[in-house]
Image 1: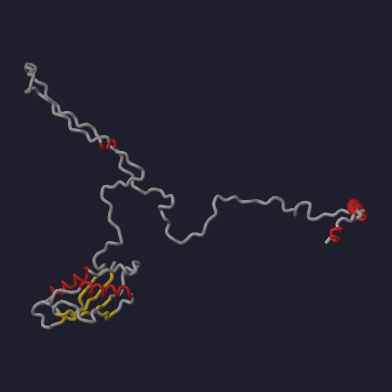
Image 2: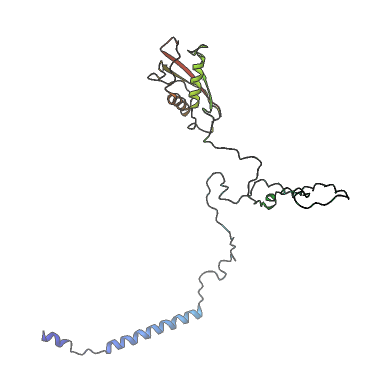
Length: 267
């Protein structure tokens, strides 16, 4: 341990490190002088002095960047639109009614003061509300009320329902057939049918009514389809939702009645 500590106390000469430093600086200075000498005899150029010769570049400034739009109807609430509300009629200043002419009293009349004195009739009040009424530019003005327009409201059935040619009721019980037709038409809902359809082929549905007015098992059945599933189902649901019906009329010769209905869409 003592011998190793003694080695750190030995002095190392710096002569060789000093000579190396001088040689390094002399070499760097010589390299710089040589590069300056070469620059005086040769000319190096990188790139074009004119920057490519293209000149200035035009930039078009835009106020907004158009975004991709969906194909949909224009929303009048989200876009500035001009009002198409009818303008109110011009104000007409009402004139005061003319005062009634009163015949002057005779020159020899004696003026009487008190309750019996002559009094002029009061003038009728003028309608000052119209003169003070202010109409805004976006105010709706009409002589009639606004018409109701909504797809939520429709005529019951939204079409025609008819009894088939082979009706079991005939003329004797025609009133019962009319009762069935009206009740089923009131329950025929066509909201599930494509609203773009204004007309469609007929749907023929057959069902059986028991004596007590209930539907027989397996009723109703579509015997002639319209080709539109939603329309066929709406016709079946109209019959199912209308059951039970009134009992078969007294005197009907059978215990059951096979009824054929034809549903025709008309909008």
